[in-house]
Image (cartoon, rainbow, N blue to C red; front, side, top):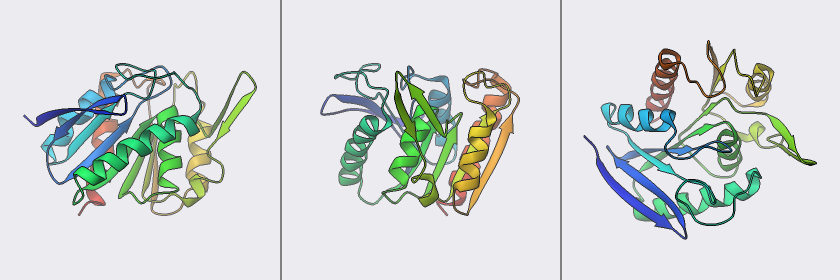
Length: 207
């Protein structure tokens, strides 16, 4: 079992599963949290690969303080704070991102500005609009590579065309995989397959 370390970065709260000299940083979706089944399972399975995992709550979500925001740019600042803290504390480690839904957009925006070894998105929209506010990864994803895009064919919130658009615009190396499940990847078997694929992709770029 990996060693657990809780952290608080300016009110952003999370947990580190120590498993090696590399970390997968998980970014949750709009109304989700670090307790997402995908992330808990990822942390457990990553340890088998000798990889650590970081789960945290964006501001206003889960245990974190602050005001809730649906804007990717504001959540990006949370991720940047966490990554800056991690890289200072564990300066010799390698870092990859695993983003779900809105967390995938945030991960893309981060990877377009900062170096990461690999990036995995799951059920991630290319763009969305809420109350007149429009968000998009246009202009960001074109600067991303080493990206694996995973999407459910039965996604009731984000059509698969969003995944195809992200894949088309991303740089090589890149890969896209579809699964027979919904937006939350609630099918246990398909979720397990997706985590396997994510870990294989990440491991390849850590070697």
